Length: 161
Image 1: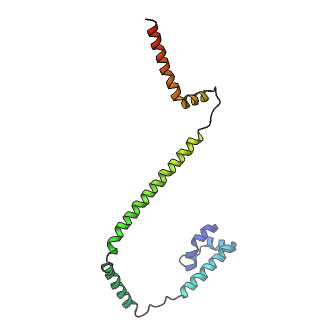
Image 2 (image 1 turned 60 degrees about the vertical axis):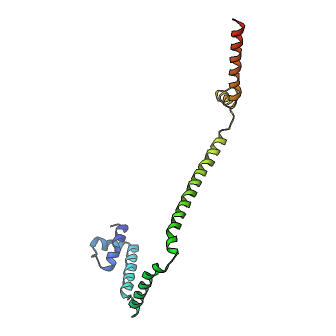
Image 3 (image 1 turned 30 degrees about the vertical axis):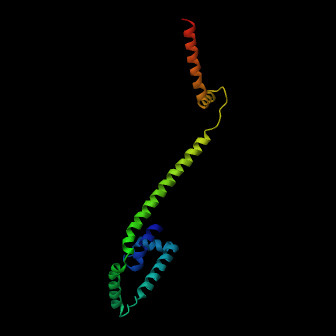
C-alpha cells in the first residue's frame, strides 16, 4: 500500500470503523510518518470521546419561544420601511446595470481610440501603402480634380463642334 491510500483510511482506522489488514499493518510498521499520523488521529478521537456537550439552561425553551414570538410580530411593526425595501433594491439593481454598461461601453471607446491612434504611422512615399495613405488623406482634393476633368471635356466639346 502507498501512503496516500493509508491516509484515506486513517479516520476509519482511528475510530475502529475498519479492521487493520495485513498490508496496512506492514505499511504502518515500515513508514514512521503514517504511523505517527495514525497515532495523532487516535489521540484526537480519544479527546473527542471524552468531551461532553454542555446542557442548555433550564430557561432556554422559554426564552426561545419568546424570541420567536417577537420575531414573528416584528414585520407588522416595521411601518414605512417595509414598502421601501423592494423599490430600493430594484433601483440599486438598475443603477448598477447602467454603471456596468457605461463602464463597458466606455472601455470600448478608449480601446477604439488607442487602436486608431496606433494606426497613424506614415509609410514611405512612393510605396503602395504610402500611395494609398496619400489617396485616403487627400480624398477631398483629388475629388475636385474630377470636376476639372469634366470642365476640360466640356470645353473640348464646345471648341470642336
